[in-house]
Length: 348
Image (cartoon, rainbow, N blue to C red):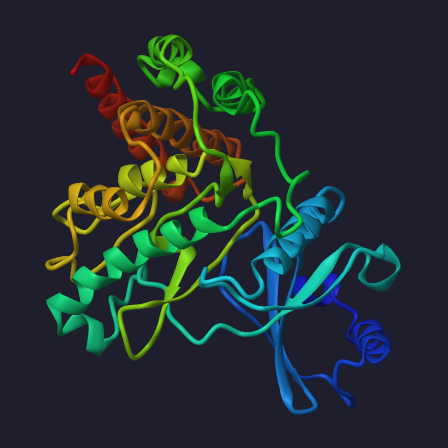
């Protein structure tokens, strides 16, 4: 039995879809889509429509339902907004159907730019298109920042009060969760982490304008249209919350590739010539937003600190044999670079 068959009983799914009035007849051509290891993405046809099902992977089924339910809630709230996203069709939080929560969304007609095969011919052949791709990502953040989270039913989706003050302790606890992993040298393998934590705690912004935060906004979590440089959808909303949207912009900057087209972790885009610089991304955001960027250096340091921990946890899991070691080593190297860059920012 394949992984998806362990997660999705097609007969049960079809009966539930009948109860929701979602087409009729057999489920056709179920196909697993690429998109990470945390959740399963299964595309299939039924009647005259195509669907994509998202549900926790086998490994995360005991705990992943809450994340799926939050994603569905977020996608429902974005319906009708200018934020590019996959349209939610229906959601189910009854574990009696498939054993875990799931939702159905419309397929996205697009491509991810962080692909070992390189960009499609249209985009690979036009530097002006590639420049616009970067600006389109910032435009997506601007549109997300304009959504009134209370008006769309997300008043209880996060805890904006004290958001900044909670960050350091939360992510240090995340790193501590892999303490003792076999083969992992430990948190001492990230020099300067304690200094970064102290600086962040001492320099928290005094005020901010709360809004919806994607939580992991970078080139691997967006899809572009096949025939233009515009975004088809922002994907993977599993870390979304209500917090400070400027952290999404900082996350985009610290993950943005350098001159070689290689960004944080496994992000890589080819050809890279023609894409905006990270400074241009920030300038485009500043020109289109009412949010103050006076404390933006703090957000950049926090993004480097947080993502460095994210990637180091991945490395610890790889050391313990729970993830591919080649990926783990790339993540550790990125974590070192992110922490070093953050230390340089606080010394400026």
